[in-house]
Image 1 (cartoon, rainbow, N blue to C red):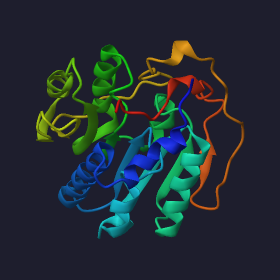
Image 2 (cartoon, rainbow, N blue to C red):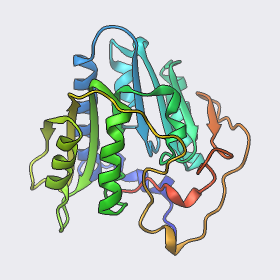
Image 3 (cartoon, rainbow, N blue to C red):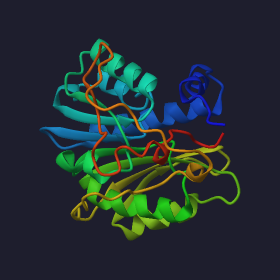
Image 4 (cartoon, rainbow, N blue to C red):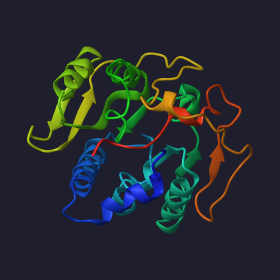
Length: 251
């Protein structure tokens, strides 16, 4: 049975929930990344963006908001619609919401490298090998001096130490990491190396439950939800593989 990813977001509205506390820390790290970003235009990417709660509220209140061009990629049409509406309501004309497969490198090709890369709610749902692969691809997604913010649960086996090592191998230095006793870990890394080319037409990850359910392609063409532009990636390599992306973190 496929969970309702729209309803899943309701835990964000419970102040004492683990997901709500994770969200607060992610937003703190996004704000810090904006604070230390260089002067001039900035780019931000959000993989498996859900309703955009990690990024949009922070941009709405930050003095660098006018400098930011952002792309949020989310598969669920309801969540993408809410993200687009939130961006419109905040007057964030530089924010684009894409309904598509965040695993597909082609979705990001024209906006990399970026100063802020959000990989939240992903690492708890893919294989260890795919977590390693995403860390490697972050070396292409993230600009020199840019920040990657990521999340991963601390359930056994705890992969967080390995994730930190993998980012280090890709030229990232650790900026912040929640304590081991925090159930939903949040990490932030700064890219100290030079970004390498992002390969075309590559699927960076695949959710571990994909083999348990059939793929259903998203509708073709453009979609709107009364807010920021939403476009579909159907027809792109990998863009019609709905089973590839599901924005869930193990809870």
